Amino acid sequence: MNVRDMLLHGAISLTPSEERIVQVLLTDYPAAGLGTATSLAKRAGVSDPTVVRLAMKLGFEGFPALQRRLLADVEARLHSPLLMMEAKRPDMGTDGEQGAAIAYMHSVASNLNKALTSTPLASYQRAARLVMDTKGKVVLLGGRYSRFIAGMLAAYLLQFRPDIMHIDALSAQKTDVLVDLGKRDLLIVFDYRRYQLDVVAFAQLAAARRVRILLFTDPWLSPISEFSELTLTCPIEVNSPYDTMASSVAQIEAVIAQILASMEKRTRERIEELEEIRLQASASLDNARLLEEEKPALASTASK
Image (cartoon, rainbow, N blue to C red; front, top):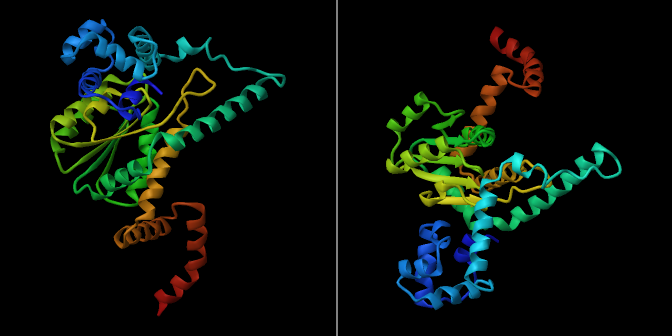
């Protein structure tokens, strides 16, 4: 658990003075905790010993130990594949590349198990309501790799409701869509470390226009979490220099499952209409076969 999670979800009893320190730390995380204990105490309006007591309540030996964890959190946020290449060199085992592949798959499976406890059911329920209750547009956006997950979710959501827009890659022209967005609309953003500046900037502009934001991110939290209405996190570290997107895909599929669990009649009718369109367009192999089977019946009906 990182320090932010400890401050947000720690099951510890805090005094009013300690709560003020926590508020300062969360408001300016992690910078507020990287100075001296005295500077933090001054910002919170408490004494130096109060800062030390809070650090010990969180399980640290003292304030320096808390700072070391904060610094580790910052370093973890900024890690690139190049920096992690040596630290996470795959173990080739005894079976050459097959050993590395299987070891990687095991680490992904472990990651997915961790994802089960990273987000409560209430968050999935709330995410489903945000998507389905939005009266305006639902715009989806992601980073270099996560934009593909945004595209997957957009393809799912198109089956359930109208006004779905996926921004595949940001440009000056794509940023112009903000002119038509406002408080009736929802922006769904995928942003994982190392956090993409143009994605963060777009989300900031959307928030300034009172667009509601649903964020999918990692345990270190994209800067977008500071102004998102709902943030869903999932673990992404595996036995590789590259973070996995498997847990992110599982998470969007969990949101879809939650939507399906509360599916209304109008949503079912939309899916049925889409299937009819796909059938007429021979969009897939099973559609094409079914259309071939129906052709004699259609021809007979037309001749009458």
